Amino acid sequence: MEKERRDFMGLGLGVFTAVGSVGALYVMKRSWDPLPSVKAAGFTTIDLAGAKGNELTVEKWRGKPIFVLKKTADMKADDRDIVIGDDRYHVSIGLCTHLGCIPAYKKDDKKFLCACHGGEFDASGHETFGPPPSPLVIPPFRIDGTKLVLGEEGPEFKKMKDAGLIA
Ligand code: FES
Image (tube, rainbow, N blue to C red; front, side):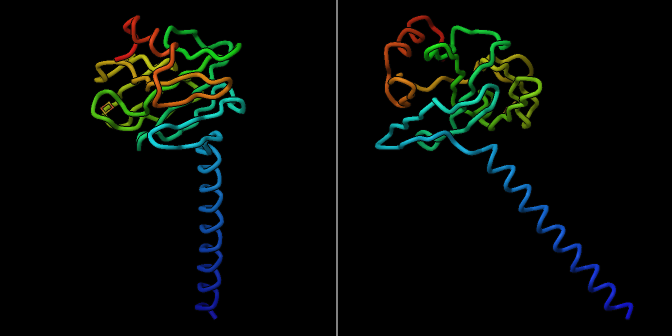
């Protein structure tokens, strides 16, 4: 009798854990869902039309994570922002400039936090704390309507490069 009770409780716990895991996976997937994008021969084209303010999406370009963060009105404008229409975006290669870990975006604090050695970057990708020696790196890009083509040096990228804003 006691054994049956234990078995039942064990089963209950298993089901509870499985349901919890699926829930956690769903939440993780939702927050990591990329924007619509097309990849071809070294280029990644991301459609920014559906991007939401202060929500980080992580794309992939040439095997590297790419951070795309649409800024909200209260977020400081920066020379490194990519401006499309009335919207500003922070776009960078999502690798910490210290030793290459992938920082996490803390949306409540509007900053990137690198768990490896405690480095921090603001929402424009500037290093603000800890060992990172330089800002998050902006990948070569070209603007095409509401789309961003990564892997191509468009006029906006060249302008940033000439101004010394690209590491
Ligand atoms: S790798 Fe990010 S702080 Fe060291």
